[in-house]
Image 1: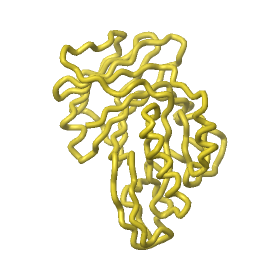
Image 2: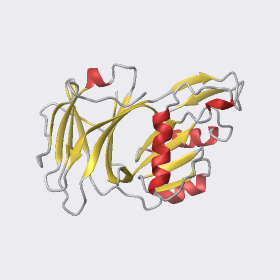
Image 3: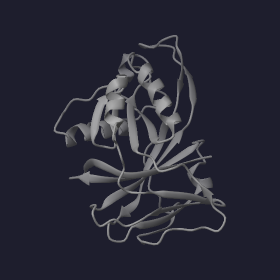
Image 4: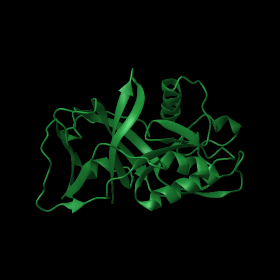
Length: 245
């Protein structure tokens, strides 16, 4: 569940303004209005309502929902089966970019720009009201390849293109810790995240991803996310698209 380089995995990453038009392609989901990142833990007693809320957001179809399981609750007595120090560090990086040192669970981050309590439904929906991603990301399947097209937009600053793989559902029986005795259903669980390259506002980007290699770990979905950085810290998310097998 840690990032790994894609050398030898991703084929033909280039920065082009040409949109991919495969002759026998399968269209993916419609353009989303938001990316919602939930920072959660199996050891957090307050997290189950947020986990359920994220599941509902994913089902709405216009939100890219991703669950990052952190590891800093493991000391309570239950080691999160999906927890990763990398995901805890990502949450810390968001806090630092906003001038804060505080992190907590459950927290939802909307479009890389705003963090809210993930179990507070009104706060989450308030953050989503009027949300929009300014950059279109198009994904189409052509055989064993996933073709990604991101058009140019000179009104936006350059950004990093990320690939995030996830598991659409996992059933976990928790034996110890604050949620001991519960059988939980987790969805949209992040399994890995990798940098694909850069998107440039003047040229756009076009990439090809080999599906058999990317989904060989049991993951069921792929999210391609274009996100700006502020001094090496995560900034606003400009665009996103998903593919699920």
